[in-house]
Image 1 (tube, rainbow, N blue to C red):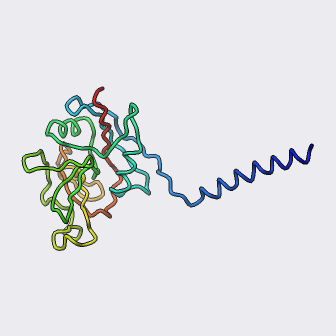
Image 2: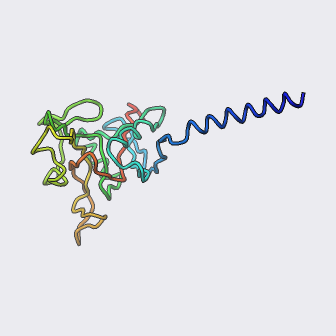
Image 3: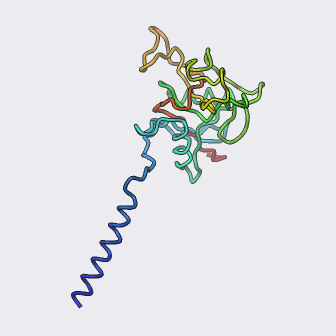
Length: 200
C-alpha cells in the first residue's frame, strides 16, 4: 500500500516536472505598468490608458500584441486610434505624454498608405497631427526603397519640443504632442491603449 502511494506521488512530481520543463524557454508577455487611466472618452466611446512597457517589450509589433492581450470591462484593448481632434485633445488633457509613445497607426511603405490597427485607412481629409519632418530619421524611412525590409513604419506621439532622453527645449511647455513615424525596429517604452467599450 505504501509502495503504491509512493509511486503515485512520484508520478505527480514527474508530471509537474515535465510541465515545468516544457515551459522553460518560452516567452511570456510581461506585465506592463499603467501610468494613467483607463479614462473614458465620451467622444470616441472608449477608454484610454497610458502604459509603460516591460524592458523586453518596446517594439511596436510586440506592444500591438500586448495591447490586445489586456482587457478593461471585458473588452480587449488595442493600440490607440486617434481619429479626431476631439480625441487628440482628450488624450493631451488627460494623459500626460512626456516621452515618445506608440499609437495604433502605421505607414505601409509599398502602398504608401496609413492604416489604423482596426484596418481602416487614413484619408486626406481625416484628422492628422504630424511633426515636421514626419519621420524620426532619414535612416529609418522607406522612401528611397519601398521594397526594402522596412515593410511599414509605425507611428508614435512625440511631445512638443521634445529632445532625446526626455530633455525639452528651455522654456518650452509640454502641452501638445505630434505624430511621427519611425523604423519598426525602434524601441519606445510607452504606448497608448484604447478599450473600445462603446459605453462607459
